[in-house]
Image (cartoon, rainbow, N blue to C red; front, side):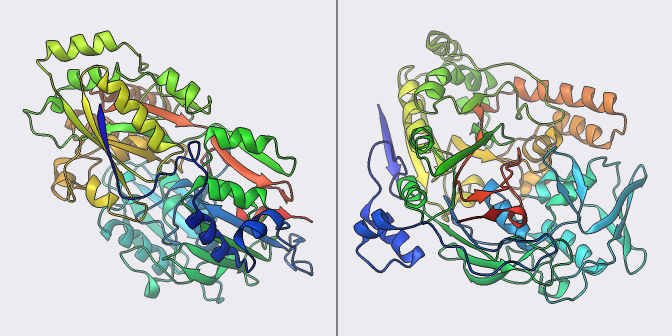
Length: 542
């Protein structure tokens, strides 16, 4: 019925135990010296470092060990900002603002951030902020950071801005950000622009350098995704409670589960439903769970030529009827996700319910036949570990499409591979992308601008979201981003979202709950709806 092509080993741990290679990798990460089997079985929990922290918050000290499911190739976010990375990146580098747990902007490096006219925001830096080497955070650092986010090729963060604000220095601590059209969400968008000393910044993901955050980098190996962060004793704010944080990654979920159950890891992320159920039974482990802001969807390639079946919205809609999402949620996702009711997650401010996905294979067949489509062949691509249980979900959907006469080839791109080149159409052709789109602002407008606000100019450089360019929709989104009146802005967003839904941009979309596993020795870990947490506030005991 379908062909599966993979470049890496599957991460599907429900079907098999973690490989010996994965366990050996963990042994290397954690410095095990005994035989792997006995070491994993006999390991005690990570030990608390002696001595109390000296920070103003009355830190308890200790070491936190975190194992991620994806390689953290950089402590910069110009190109990548998947959820777990944000936790680590913002422990080292800070922005003018941040998004709080209520999904509203809060001041960080900025003392004030005010819209002083419809197209101008005036920002004043705090007088006490500085980097870990005690050098001042300057207006020039902010100017350079903003400029470089827009210069990097295929920038993730820059794509969420409807336009690049122009920067003008007022004095040594103040500046203005001016846009051609009003941009009422600029204080939220600037929470994603991480500040680095101008002389050390580049139009690329930075592999090194200092920041103004509560931790500094003591050791780093971006190739293996291994980092050791230590408390920044020169931090301008309330010092971190922990002495150090050790970060590593393991692509196989079974190995991550072994790491936390054996006490070699304190926190793991991206957990499949099966592992979540198993971990709930462990008396030493707690699951932290809550509604999320991440959208995962099977997004169509909108760069198809006019004669392609996928260029027809009725064909795109027809294929969605082949997907039994209720069965997938129940059998493969254990109820830990919610099927989308619109084109952005319903947890975001400005969300509008535009419809729902339905399973009706007979309707899928009849609609395809009505459009003269038969013998359709599709290629699905996704990056390894893009979402929990990705390989199994894709295989199941391929089978469902086979039931309506569609042949599917599955191609999994290795983590750290060429997924960006594939997304831009530079590595090969594809039809459907399994992709997650995180939201760090709490605003529906951020997703809408980044995914559905494409222009012909952006498409020339392949900087649209997979070729989605509909001028009428982009105009509505631009108008919404410029509208100061909340009621009028919401009306524009509603119109835009309904028009996006009518294009059937995705075969299916869903929002997973945020699920994180931690050992009970880890306290004060508060997971935000954006699926990140403040490392500086985490405590460990025992």
